[in-house]
Length: 198
Image (cartoon, rainbow, N blue to C red; front, side, top):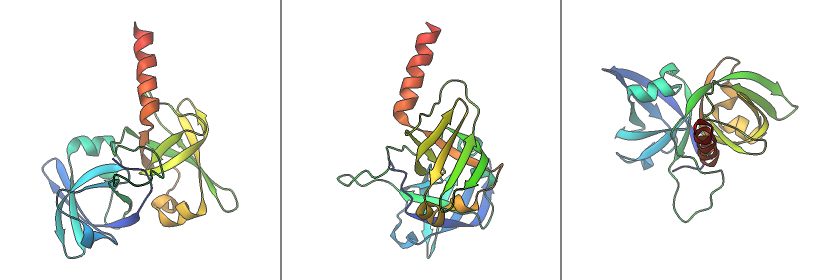
């Protein structure tokens, strides 16, 4: 379980294909604190640490993960948002994030608002996902508040701190981003869809 509050960014140092899986080697500021079998969200995708050596660690993405996320687009040098799992007993600063990416979206707009940024993301939907104004959504692992909401796109406002300390500053129009929709919204969308079928 995560909160969508990014702890640090990591950098992809090595990519190694192993059958249909890919091993990613990364560096980050807290590598020395990581343990094997620990859950760590990478751009919002929960991956397990399988190796820690000196200042680098390794995670494995299976084919299903690669098909659902933007991990297959990563290259050596890609900057990745990182969050370790939530500690029980602390404050929940973002929102409840599972680390299970629902789908990818595409950056459709980036507006500089004189200090903040408005990013618009479009996505394909079959009625399973929804956003609402002032609701929560996770983009590349970052818990964000929806500023504008339409059927298959939404916009989020990015404060200067988030812009500077995450990989948001590297986004370009057309880039794929990982999306995890709010868990409560997913349950409601599922119930509505089920009632419409009956």
